[in-house]
Amino acid sequence: MSKRKAIIAHCRALNSSGLNQGTSGNISIRHQDGMLISPTSRPYDSLQPEDIAFVDQNGKATGKFAPSSEWHFHLDILLQRPDVNAVVHAHPTYCTTLAIMGKEIPPIHYMIAAFGGATIRCAPYEIYGTAALSKVAVAALEGRKGCLLAHHGMITVGQSIEQAFWLAGELEALARQYHGCLVLGEPPLLSDEQIEEVLEKISGYGQNHSS
Image 1 (cartoon, helix red, strand yellow):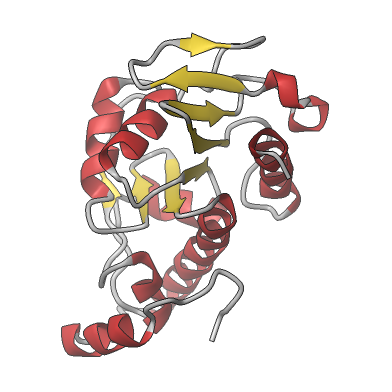
Image 2: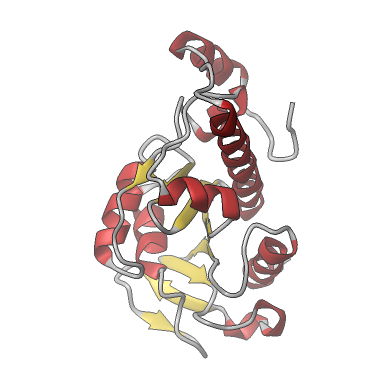
């Protein structure tokens, strides 16, 4: 499958999976000296390969339609993270609920280690589509494969679009679990040593595994 078709397929999957609604999500893949990214405000079901925009490393966009308004953080992540080849951004319900409350996700479950550390950070609020949002998003993703954006949504990254999408689902699952725990009270947490043990064991973990 071409990169353009892969972006379209995964944009549609964002909505069909319940991870997103409308056209608020966006996906990018590293390409040449920049990236391919879903266009702004275009219904996913209508997208064709030629509708996917290209943005070079200097932020210059070309294509039939303008790139997603969030192209800033997609590009900055790809430029600053050579380990990342794809970025997924969406507004899933539980991630966004925690983000509205400004809560990071602590080590409630061992699967948090799939994101590279003991927490999922929540970047402070900045208005969408700005360099300011990009700056705080990149910082929240340091050493991580996912983060929340205050009063906004979430971002996941991966070596492939398949991995980034898989992590988006895992992040929403963790957010839902944490939300459920908070209804009952403050949950017990895994220790740093326990998370380190999982990080060692999880090396090479594939996107199709969950246990």
